[in-house]
Amino acid sequence: MTDLADFAARLTALTGGRASTPRIKDSVMTLTLDVAGLSPQQREGLARAIREGGLTVSDVVEVRIIETAERRPSRILAVASGKGGVGKSTLSANLAVALHRLGLKVGLVDADIYGPSQAKLMASEDQKPVAQDKKLVPVTGPHGIPMLSMAHLVEPGKALAWRGPMAGNALGQLIDAHWGDAELLVVDMPPGTGDIQLSMIQKHKPAGAVIVSTPQDLALIDATRAVSLFAQAGVPMVGLVENMAGYACPHCGEMSDPFGQGGAEQEAVHLSMPFLGRIPLAIDIRRRSDAGDPPAAGEGAHADVFVGIARKVADWLKTAT
Ligand SMILES: Nc1ncnc2c1ncn2[C@@H]1O[C@H](COP(=O)(O)OP(=O)(O)OP(=O)(O)O)[C@@H](O)[C@H]1O
Image (cartoon, rainbow, N blue to C red):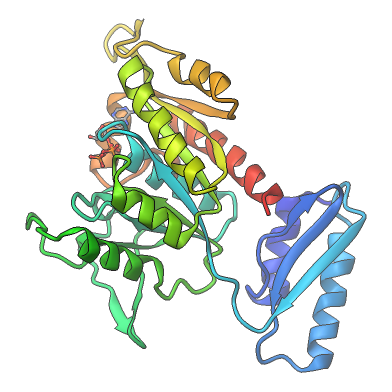
C-alpha cells in the first residue's frame, strides 16, 4: 500500500499541480481537480489515473474528485493570540515552513497591519509585490513560500496611522491576492480581540484557528478570550499551542520555567480543544527568527517541534470540511 505523502507527490507530477492535497475521511479520499482548459478526454484520462493511484493508498476504498473550472480559493488558517508578544508571528512563520515541508501548498499573510514582522522572519524584506489585474502578486522568499505583508508595501520603520476601515481594506488586499495554487493561507492575525479582528474573521471566514499562548495565567485568560472570538464567528478551533515553555540554560543545560509550564495544556483540556504542542523558550529560536532563518526550515529538536505541530494541523485540515 502507498503512503499518502508519496501519492500527493505523484499527484502533483501527474496533474501538473492541478489537484489539491487529498483529504481522507472514513476511507474516502476527496480532492479538487482544476480542469480549466482540458478537453473531455483529457479530463476523463486524468480522473481515471488519479482514481487508480488513490486506491493504492492505505485504507482508501473510494476516491472522489471534485472537478472545478476555477482554482479553489485558498482556505485560511488563522494563527491568533489574545495578547501581543507571545510568539504568534514566530509560530505562523514556522508553521508555514513546516507545512510546506510536509508537502502542502501554503501561502503566508501577515495580517498584523500595524506591526508587520513576517517579511523579516521570512527574509523577504527586499522584495516588492507587483499588482496584476488590480490584485497583488505575492512575493516568494528564500523558503519558497508565497507571502504578503504590509512590510512589503510600506517603508521600514514608518508608522501606519490608519483607522480601522483602512486597515481592514489593506488586509483584504493581502488576502484577496493572486495566490496561484496555494491551497492554504496561514494568516498571522493582529494581536488582541477587537473589532478589526472580528470583522476580518467574519469577512474572510477562516477554516480553522490555532491559538498560541505562553503558559502563565494572564496570557491564558487572554487566550480564552481569543477562543471565544472565533467561537462567536463560528470558526472551528484547530487547537492550542504553548510557547516559551521551559528554558534550557545554554551554559549548564539546567531547565527552568520562567513562565511556568503546562498551563496551556491544562487550559486546552478545560476548553475541550486539542493541545497541539509545546515550544520551548530558546535563544536559538529567537536568534534564528530574527535572522530570517526559521528553525522549522532546519534540522534538530526545534525543527521537530514545529513539524510535529504542523503534522497535527495538516491532519486536522484533511478531515475538516
Ligand atoms: N519560543 C521562543 N523562544 C525564544 N524567543 C521567542 C520564542 N517565541 C517567540 N520568541 C521571541 O519573542 C518575541 C515576540 O515573538 P513574536 O513576534 O512571534 O510574538 P507575537 O505574538 O507575534 O508579537 P506581536 O503581538 O507583537 O505581533 C520575538 O523576539 C521572538 O523572536
